[in-house]
Image (tube, rainbow, N blue to C red; front, top):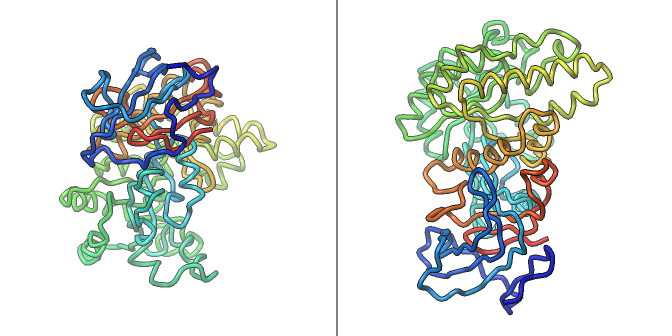
Length: 426
């Protein structure tokens, strides 16, 4: 069989029509062969041939007839990547779903969505787009974040009142109210539970003050009870946090994921030159998070990019140093870091770029965090994020060695495969 010239990644099968993608769980025995690829093994790229059978990777040629052979043209094969925090992966946003597929990001965690936005289709939890895990409505305080977002959408007529309380959010101010509302939350069948902690060290100050509408969160004393209820129902919990105190409350409450790095959205005092102390994670909390195997999601890209545009370079440098200090603290104690952007108009590709651009991650660490750990924490029950026998055949092919440059890692893949089928080719 003649190899494709350069990195054209030509298909070697005669047919120009791509077969419909089939999930790894469907039991079909359709077999594909992938030649002339360099496959990432967690440390380096190794030239070899791989196969997929029914959407599952195999290193040896199976007994089934090969339906199609793909020549990867010497490209660099990496696991499909993840986006651990974004709200744009919904059925009403086909452009974002297509962008995920084009970028080789096939696992997304959506913490806060309208329940009716999760209907599966070809591009959403289907054969040609990302697989998405949804929290549905999160639990917050009366007047807390993200009620302001819902209020704006209702006022402009794009949402109805019914899409606020009991759909996009649940307000809880007591254990009694939690007991009353939790069954309704469960009845919407979330994949995990989202809670909102917003400067919880100032909970009493903000609780009844309209100045802090949508800039406050749960009574921190309720966090552990919510986590216990969710865990009893077999659901993981992600905590929205903003301050280091929020982070501490979340860790003490035994959440599974912390949805933000503290300081991802600095307050006006900090942006105007004030101290960053309120955002610095303590060593005790980092140590406890590691012991409890809690995952922390970055969501720092927008803050880093914005800091670079500030005319006050001292403030920008302090914000970037704060992010670096927190990441180093967590990494020193072995806390797992997942990559998520919380940028509605972008995705984790931009997050990965900004983190490497500011020297918060080196390339090999980013590759493992973005394309191995992140998919695994989004779908912990699935064999994803690794290119080896028995794992789902969801992967991308890059033109250049991503270990050689951060630019290569965040470049558009030449090819993207899901369940063994080619879904994107540039």
